[in-house]
Structures are given as structure tokens and as C-alpha cells.
Length: 66
Image 1: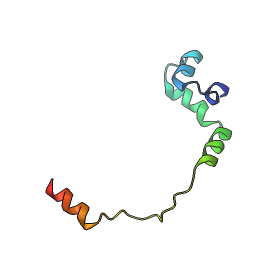
Image 2: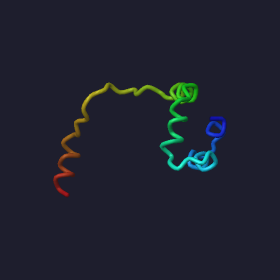
Image 3: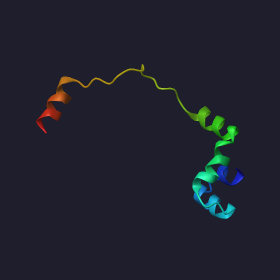
Image 4: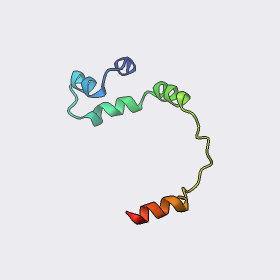
């Protein structure tokens, strides 16, 4: 996990650990809750209200003309 947090690519970590697949390495990455918490702390909540996108008439006219 220290390698990942230092910016080393997970494919290279998998090679160093002798993993045949990145899926095997991913199991270890999923286990690090501190890393997930740090990433989530950097996220900003969306400023718009959740809902379905409705294009305006001008966009719809353009798309129909294609």
C-alpha cells in the first residue's frame, strides 16, 4: 500500500508481487480504507440537484438536423 500511495502504478506493483492478474492485486487495494477515506475527503459534492438531464429545444433541433 505504501507503494501505491507513493504513486507507483498498480500494474508494476502486481509484477513485483508476482501476481498473475491485476484482479489479485486489486483485492489488496480494496482493503485499504484509509486510502479510500483520503480520496473521498478530496471530493466535492455536486452543486446541482440530482435528476434527469433535459436538453433544451436548440440542442434537440441541432441533433435532429445531423
